[in-house]
Amino acid sequence: MLQEVPTSTLHFLQSEIHYEFKQVKLLIQALTHSSYANEHGCDHNERLEFLGDAVLELAVSHILFTKFPEVQEGHLTKMRSSLVNETALAEVAHRLRIGSMLFLGKGEDAQGGREKNSVLSDALEAVLGAIFLDGGLEAATASVKILYKEQWPSPPATFRPKDYKSQLQEMTQRMWKERPAYILRESHGPEHAKYFVVQVMLPDGACIEWEASSMRKAEQGAAARALQHLQKKYPITIQDG
Image (cartoon, rainbow, N blue to C red; front, side, top):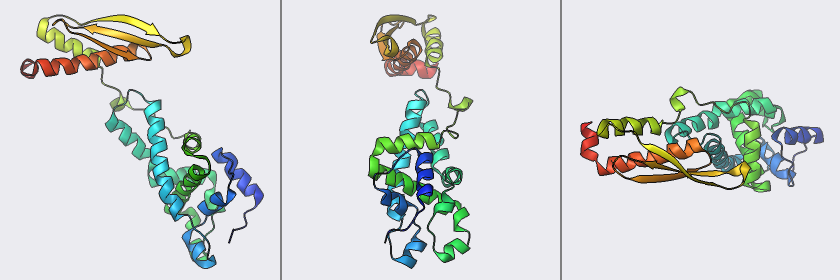
């Protein structure tokens, strides 16, 4: 049985999530709580919620990976956790007014189900699962990016990437009383998408290269790789230092 939803409600929600469904029944199912389904013998949103949970985690991971290219894995995990938990999901759902659109059983409705974080977060995950089924991962990721536009974190100081160049300089100064030298080997690609190949020359004669989308990133990448080289070649010396 397909629940009746005012056309204006569907238009509003689809405009807010920036996705127009080809199969509107998926969106309606995403808004249908199991308590309503039990009373009316229709499909509920729990399977879509299961799918949406995975879609959300992947989409947020991808966006954070792209948005913060120098943030380390451990901090990316913390940032993702702050976005995919029940409280964060419920905040988005409240903003979308999903609670007023839900199909709830009489008992759940009477107990304030439309305001429960657990119900709202599950429904939002179900909506994302529905978008994935209807339009694929790219559509779901685009929607997540917009839905979280007010919640994307700015990495605090503790999230800043390691300054590998400083670490490398400290190490070479300690070992040889010399600094590493950086040379731009080449740059290639169109002006709007250039790549830079930087070589770092170490006092022991090693030359290590790294390629990245900016000089700074290339130098940091070369320095990080040089540190690995030194730690492998001179483990005793470094440990003693």
